[in-house]
Length: 256
Image 1 (cartoon, rainbow, N blue to C red):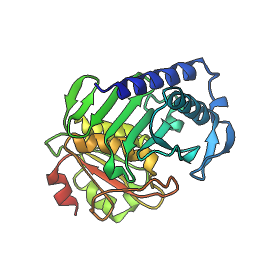
Image 2: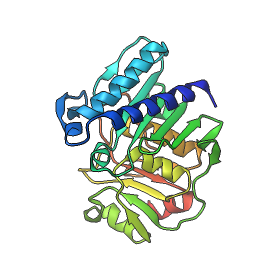
Image 3: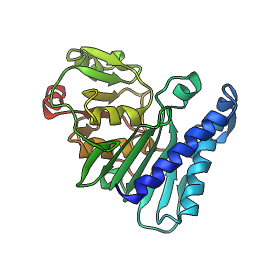
C-alpha cells in the first residue's frame, strides 16, 4: 500500500473519533456558513474538512485542493486532491451507518485520477485504487460483478425518469443509499450491479464521485453520463451532472 493511503486512513480515523466525541444531532446539522459549491455548510461538514486540511498542511502534500466547503485551493501544484470529507451527511445525522470520506488524486479532470480512497466513517472499512495496480477493499483485491443480477442503487426520483423506467425492467432489488462514494465502492467490490443518479434533482459534483469512479474503473466497471458517453468532470465544484455506473458491459448495452 502506498504511504499516501496510510495517511488517508489516519485522517479518516481521526474524523471518526472526532464525530464520536462531538455532541450528537441536531447540533451536527447547525449551519455555519455557505460552501463554495453553493450549499449550506453544516457543523459536521466543516469539522471534517478542517481535520483534512490540517493533515494536508502538516504533511506538506504537493497538491491543490478541491473541497465542498473551501472550493479550489490553489497551492501551486500540478495535481489536485478532490475531497468530500463527509459524504452522506444526512445518513450520519440520522444514525444510518453509510457515510464516508472520499479522496481522489487527479490531474485537471477526474478521468486523470491516479488514486481513489473511500472510507466508511461508521465502521472504518475502506476501499482504494491505484491506477494500473487495481482496486482494493482493505487488503483484498476487488472486481465488479461479472453478472447482471439486477441489484441496483438508485437516486430518489428514478421512477419518474424515462431512463429510470427503462432500467427498472432489469432490476430485481433496489436501494436508495444516499452516499454516492460508498455506493460506487460497493459496486466496485461486487455488492451491486448499477449505481444511477438520474433526473434533474439528482445531480452530482466532482467531490461526490471522483474517488469512487477511480475505484470502479480500476475494478473493471464502466461509468457514463446520462447519454452513455464516458463520464468526466473538471475541477469546478459548482458543476453538477447525472451519472451511471455499471458493473459490466452487458448491463451497459441493454441500457443504451
